[in-house]
Image (cartoon, rainbow, N blue to C red; front, side, top):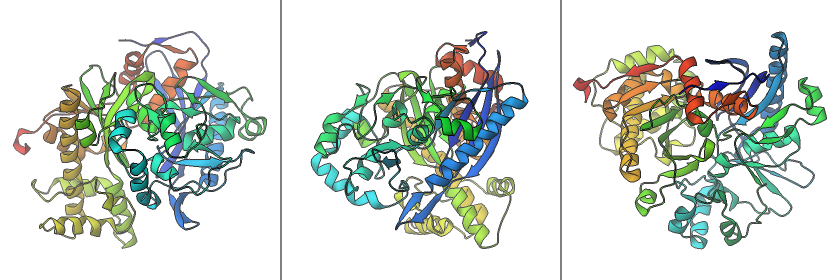
Length: 484
């Protein structure tokens, strides 16, 4: 399947791609047979203790976005081009509250804050979990937006904007909620593709608490005059809705050339699942804690949100504070040299969500299971890798069974696709071929949806993915029978 690239002057496309630990602004150019990405600005992100809770420093984050867009404008001009549009993707579930004047009332809470834990039971007294799942198809996580909102003391006169929508609002003045991210709130009807307004009412929330929905590929608006001047872009530069949940953009760029595939979007979190045409809303699916979230082109991302490389990055942070700073390749090589069959943890345990001495947390979990894990970075790293690979295998088997959809290949995209030890262990644990890459799947999906919206690329997901295959180095891992 080959993408059609038109003769439209598509220019270049700016992707604002922000994760829970870092962000980038990336300039993308689409040609007839590939997509070229250039990172023009990188910046850190992370939670801070603000006003008694774990929050995002959104003001600093938005300043970095503006700096990145100005860098994109400069980089495009240096090549005799202009930025045709801007697309924004971030993590899910978190939001900012904006008043009628458009002011952000406080720095947004992070999902890593523990405040929503106490709201779960009161919400479930009003809305039975089985009923919630039968409508939203959403995996239960204590930090889902629905539980966060239940902790808000006063929402009168305020509107909730999910993080990418909040950035788009500050750029354009237009309030919209992009559908792939809306589907992570617990207030979205998985079948109808609309807000589940009866749930808003049952929780005493206004039906217009969130702005109207917008689909990937639709235009949110153009730059406000002051923003355009600040970033040195024309005022008519469009901000286009993409898969604003970063996983939706990443899955859109999975380089699949077959229908029967599983994917792992591997980064701070691991999103493991299948791409379907219809949600799976059975009781068995709810009990297995699978989620049905929207993807690009109305697809369903049937997946489980698992622990990810946050475990390793938090260990590295603790070790660095203790004066031990090994390079990651050396650490992974030392872990790979250890024999298989060591202790494992449950990477999905909420015990690992908050930051704080992750190596000791992991060793403590192993001790509680009646095993011993040495206080050795290589052994702890191997425990994390083995645990993630085993979790991936369990999740893929469950997804195949629940969706009645066998898979032949596993695609790993995102930062984890560079982790050769994790990819090989995943092939061993699943017994499937693993195709690793692209690393920049999220940015690729973001840019390609913008390019299609501009009329520069034609076709569906298959055509977009053909461009990814043609432009991305991929690595294949096959199961090693000796380790099965």
